[in-house]
Length: 276
Image 1: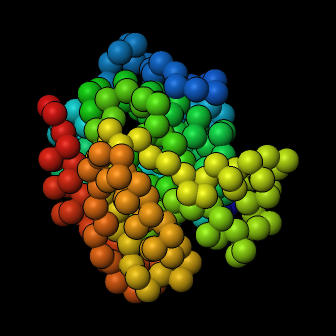
Image 2: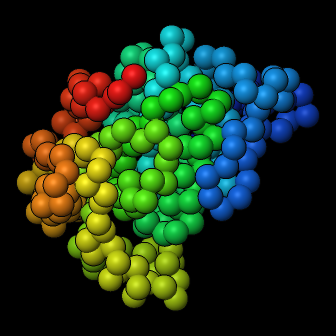
């Protein structure tokens, strides 16, 4: 399934590659990097509206640039079993992404190591993507959206000023406690963290968020995959206890129910957090 999605994405991104077939922008390294221009454009010149392929920190990535940019970038951290193709799907987050683009937000996503469960490499990949896409989209303000497993990477990205210009974090049924899903996903989690799995379980169960970044989370009490009480509720409570701003908005049904993808709520939250 993942291979099929990547083929579809490659076809969609073909118009954004150079004549020799290279991706439209390339960035390497293990941490935040300076933006790399698309071949044929001058350094520092923003990308044209449309879908653009990148390779950032060794991972495939995509940036959607709006017709009428508002100077704002959303970095999306995908869930388990997903990849950057989630950005282009008409359902679930893809529909929300289309709404964000229509509102003037550039939106960027990376494969970020696949099922990485908040590994250091996935955090670095998202930080590098934010730095690169911020320049390519001429965005002064950055916002995080994470879904399910992506919540582990996102929570670490709001710690220690990892992303320049970060204003807010929105979580969609976000995973905040790695230990809460270990019983169901032990093999995948061990594969992601290797010999460091015990340290990861201790450090990410639950992960701590920087209270300086406003947080809004959507979660359902009926979710039996990522339990709301141990995840969204726990992380929001930690941010509030540390003096920050956080709230959990109720969604319905099981993990991935359409009620989690609240475009109006995300737009209102980001608008309130924006300074520009």
